Length: 456
Image 1 (cartoon, rainbow, N blue to C red):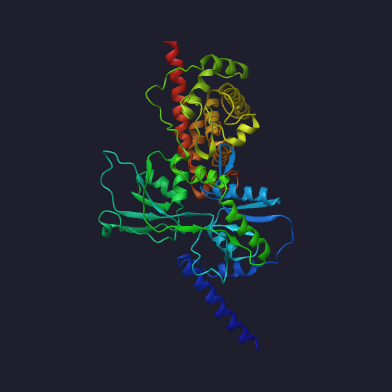
Image 2 (tube, rainbow, N blue to C red; image 1 turned 120 degrees about the horizontal axis):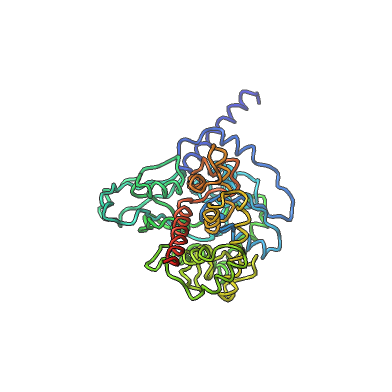
């Protein structure tokens, strides 16, 4: 067979593969290089006791919150690691196009990524048993007096592929869809808050995860069919794939699985309203203990009081977003580091919280102005210090003063945008910084209010 004939056959095959990619992915802007990437990523399977997984950096599945890695699929992979008795190496990817290429390759044992698999199944990919189900929901601002006129246009994010159904909406014929190929769902949330758009769509599991960070927004009705969330498995690993599927089926019958669903997929997984309330300058029954703890660690007791009010309003037995617990609303990993859990006494929780605040003070005391310290510490208590250090690095990179909170917070807010959370100086990835900006403003306003109230 001559070289010309070889080239013709290759071009036909490449064209067919590209057509399938475009149809399945729902976008005509995927270009030929993706075919080349898929072809070259088909590498020989490595023999190892380690199970390799690639996980999309996604608010619902992998997220750094208060210094802890949380996320539904991340936690499932870690549970599988325990049950299999084999290490699971997790690689995090932020680019959806790269994830699509990875799903077509033999590079990983497991690829955790949602996309339209209709035209790929069986021929190009092997799906696992469903881990959960989700569906599209409408996201909008909560109604207010000055926000009554809205366009019935639903904005979809980049790579969003689910078919939307407005038949249950009032006047369904008036609804239309606008695709935003350059915006992630997190960008659409920010655009909703800023009143640039009126409606957006995301999947239910994402909505449940993001809503605690956007008090101005509300998740509305279901506007599409439910669909399964599955892993993409390596075609070369039949024995391992059978084990994974059997494990998923068994795991879904356990209380641990139900606990993860409640933690990440239930609207009741967050129960704390972080607003001021009517008693924003009130004292508590714990004031003598707070003075003792703050005095021991060398910071103002009014500050820890304001942190506690913001976190729990001094209610000791709350379970919050991502599994945070108790009067200090510590994440389980942080609590374990300081020797407490949701069964610890309130006194032990407050001592642990004081020690953690002292730890955060030590991180920033030589990096920022003294008058600014509590701004950075309260921000770190909410988001984890990694996101604040990221914002400081961005602030410095773009020529601003990283010792001043009012300048750093601008870059913390920008960490919700891809151009910034993918910057080379950023270590902790995406974060919805407006939430922490509001948190710090409320904590510090209350803190100064406590001081003024005591001086009267």
